Each structure stands twice: as structure tokens, then as C-alpha cells.
Image (cartoon, rainbow, N blue to C red):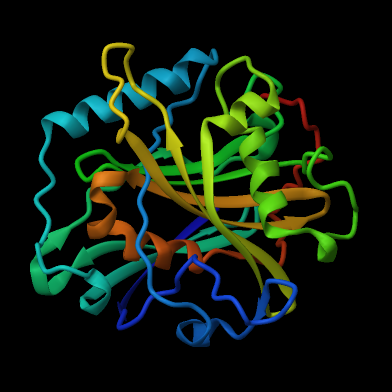
Amino acid sequence: MVVLSPSLLLLPTLPSFRHEPGSNGSGMLSHNYSNYSTKFHQKTTLCCSVASKPTSPNVLWRRDLLLLALSSSLSTHFPSSGCLAAEDVRMTSLVDEINAYTYSYPVELPSKKFLFKWVESRKPERYSSAAPLSPDARLRIVSERVDIVDNLIISVSIGPPNVQFLKSKDKKTWAAKDVADSVLSDKSALRVTSSQRMSESSVLDAHASEIDGELYWYYEYLVRKSPTKSAQEANLYRHYVASTAEREGYLYSLSASTLSKEWTKMGPLLEQTVASFRLLPPTDNYVPPYKDPWRFW
């Protein structure tokens, strides 16, 4: 069951995904959800990726081509007011009871009469039936929404930790960079090794934060990948921000992205979305990832 709840939020300051040195030696921040602005400094980021349920690894590649092609032909009509952090933003909350998490995403900028054009490309579903992000089917997208016109993607994925990076079973010992590498190593539609998948991505920053007793790892990264062999532009990449939490031996990750050229416009809003990601107490509708992990119906 999915619950959507609209709300109007004022965003005078947004959480940054660049860790400020000196918080403590471990690189982990501890704070309440309502006090993000005292722990982060502002920053902007953006990214892009698309999803339709793949029947082969090439489908995820084709979806990237589609989004990039559309973004080239469609100009984003967005208010040119500089930083959007000072704008009033109407947010809607999504609650996925199947996988027990929630997050908020922007739907409108009332003062600019700007509406986002979100389409739910993947409705929330159980891990066993979700679309895999790599041939080994470890990491899977359990929900996704896309704004093709404005080149925005918000997706939630679930997968087991990669023991190459997260060797300990004690998550309190995990470094944020290792968590990011673990997730990114499984995030590829190509039949390549984990190290080759990681070479597609460049992690800019990573840090951990404890919120209401739960650890969340935040990271920011770029994916440099040309959509076609004829377009080898050095500045053609996607900008992502993401948050990951662990439950019952699985990593739950929310990522938000757009093309790098759109980051200064949309980045603060995507950071707000990622900062809102929370695991929820399971209800009767919750289906744990380990239940029938290879069931596709």
C-alpha cells in the first residue's frame, strides 16, 4: 500500500551532502531531523537515470538513451531565480508499506507557478519481483518516479551489502565511503565486474548521520557515461545524491539525480528529498527482502 500526503514546506536552508570536517573524528554526525541546517552547509547536486521494467540488461541502457535524448530536445522551463532554497516548495510524502520506508518529493513551486511532471515509472513492489540493476540481480529497484521534461529521477533500491567493501557485520563500523562503494558496485546493467562498475562512478563525498537511533549514510557521486559512441563529450555526466540505511541484512537506498547541467536549478530540491528518506516500523503489509528472494510473481 502506498500513501501520498501533500504538504507545503518552506526551505530557507537545505541539508548539504558535503561533510563538514571537525564534526567528530569518525565522520558521523548525530542530530535530530528538525535540525539539519546546523549540521550541513548548503550545496547543490543533480542526476539522471530512468527505469522501465527490464527483461534484459540492455533495457536499462535504452532507458538512459531515451531520457538523454528527450532532455536534449526539451528545454526545461524553470524559474531563473538562482538558488531554489529560498523558494516555497510544496512537497508530497510517499509511504511504501510493502518495503516500510517513506520520503518526500517536490511537486510545485507555488510562487513561480511551476509544477513538476512526475510519472510513477515503477510502483512500489516487493524485492523478489523488482527489476534488477545488474545481471547478478543483487540490487533491485523497488520503486521509481520520473520527470522526463525536467530530467529528474527518484528511485529506491534494495540489495545485500557487498562483502568486498563491508566486511564487518557490525554496521556501526562501516565507513560511509565503503557503503557508497558497496551500493555502486552492484549498480550496472552491463555484464562487467564490480570494479568496472565502480569506474563508471566517481564519489564526491560521503558521510554518516544517526537519526532517531538509526544510521543513515549520505553520499554524492557523478556517473560519467556517454549515451552514444558518437557523443564523447567530457562534460556529459549525471549528478546524484543518495541516502542508504540497513535493515535485516539489506541496504535500502534512495537516489535522486539529474543531468549535471541542471544541477544548480534542481539540486537543492533533490537534496531535500534524499534528506527526508526514512525507514519505517514494519506493518502487516511489510514483505522483507529475504522472503522468497527469487520469486518473480
